[in-house]
Structure formats: structure tokens, C-alpha cells
Image (cartoon, rainbow, N blue to C red):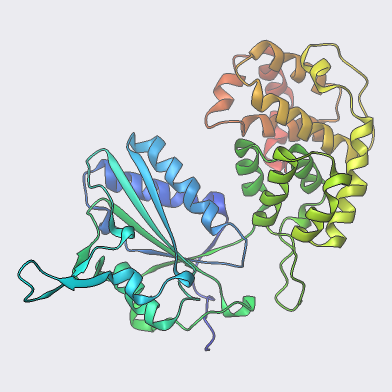
Length: 371
């Protein structure tokens, strides 16, 4: 396999990628132009960096900005063979010609109030016979007799050969017809998504304290379990839906992010014993503030998780902001910025709270430096 060179294409965080593509597609859609005006996009990046997550976020942003429903068809090409893409041959009505039954991935509605996204994942790892068919989709929006609807955006994604993942060299004639973006890990971008998506507060707090553990992929290592945004989302699902007792879930967490990182998470989680009752904070009772950076990161994460469930109760939000006045400016800034991530445009709601408006006047200049 030949090396895939990515030295002359832009690198973007998930947040920047979603912002740029959503703005581009929204402008095209709202102008009534065909979505194929924008070339098919090819996302490159390490395993687990968040390429699939970016496509899901992009769908939500387009839906919000255009008022249209967005449907994502996620196709894992590594599991396909060429016949899956072209369809099954059968005889026509008078049995004189062969026709191809349309494959499921082409069953998309073509309505004015709908936008389709066809996401061709793992394209660089698929067998070359499958890639040939997939590339026809990205370039010509057809395979054999079947054509994508006019309202369909095509986005492909794949790993790099440097990631120790299966990846075939992309022909230059094909590469020149795609819009290439390399997806890079960014804690700031991930944190904004994590808060809105309900990632477990212990995962959020730990990674705020140890940001370098968000993406621990090392292509030179033979470790099977390593930390990535994808594996941390799996850890969060275990803690949210099975048990939030990290001691109890430790073996499963270690199987996702590796034993070294899991040990540090388990040790760090003991700081939760120092935290005040979060409901008391939002009730306005002003319990004692814990000390130590590790406990304060945990406190900010726990308060943000509680705020996410009560973001429309501005009285309780104000109580928590007044409590945050007891924190150092650095940590109160972290918390206020996390609050602004609760939902798109939430800063405008916060501005209706006198305590937040006061905080913004006195400490708002620190926002740009907050993690």
C-alpha cells in the first residue's frame, strides 16, 4: 500500500469543520442551488478522532439553519462488496434484458423539505473493487443504473496509512475531484459537543483536568485499547446507563481506554467525595467550596451536568452563578463558558440573569482564555 500524503490539505477541529461545512451547505440550500454544487467531501483522520460525530453534528446544524429535515445514511464500506452497491441483477418483465434492483442505500426520499446525507465511512479501507464503485458515487453520484437524488450530500471518510489502519492510495484523478479535510483532535471543540450531548460529568471533569487524555492514539503502539473521543463516548454511555460507580465499571472502562488511563480516572474520581451537594448549590444554599484544582474541575463538570437538565429554570441558574463567585476567576470562567455551551444561543438566555450580566462585566475578558 502506498502512503497517502496529507501535507497540503487543511486541518480542522470538529467544531471548525462543522461550522465551515454547515455555513457552506446552508448557503447553497437556501439559495435553491443543487447540493452537488459543493464537491463531495473527503474527511481524513486517526481512528476515533470524531469523523462520524462531525457528520452527525453537521446534520443537526443544517437542519437548524435551513428548517429542513436532514436524514443521514451511514454506509460502512469495509463491510460491503461491489454487488451491495450496484444491486442484484434480475430479468426485466419480458425476460429479454437484465436490470439491477436498487440497493437499500439509494432508497432516499427526494422532497423539498428534506436533505439527505450519504456518509461513506472507511472508504480508504474498503477493497479496491468496492472503492471503485464508491468513487463513482462521490464523483458522478451514480452507480450503474442508479442515481442519487438531487437533495443528497455525499461525504466520505477514511484513515491514513500512518495510522496503522488499512488504507489504499487514492488515485490522483479521483483526489482532484474531492474536497479534502484532515480532522484533528481539539479538546475545546470536543467539550462543546460533550456538554450538549450529555457526556457523563465524570468523563467531562477528568478530561478537563487531563486534556491530553482525550486522544491517546499512537500509531507506533500495539495497544488494542486506547483513549479517543469515540472510546470516551463509550465510557460515558456505561456510566450514564449502567452504573456511575467507576470502581464497579473499572474493568469495562479499562477495556475501552486502556488500564493506565482507567487507573488515573478511578483515582481522580475520588475527588467527588469532596464535592458539595449540587442540588444545594442550585437551591441557593451556598455550601462550602472544595479546594484543589482536581476537585474544582469535578465541581464545574457536575454543575454543568445539573445545569443541562435545568437550563430553563433561570432562578436556579442564578443561584449557581452566585455560588461560582466564590471560585477563583479562572474556574468561574471555565464554568460560565461551559454554561454557554448548554445549547446554541444560550448566552442570550444567560444575559437575562443579573448575576451573569454582572459577572460578564467584571470577568468577561477572561472568556477567550478559558478551556
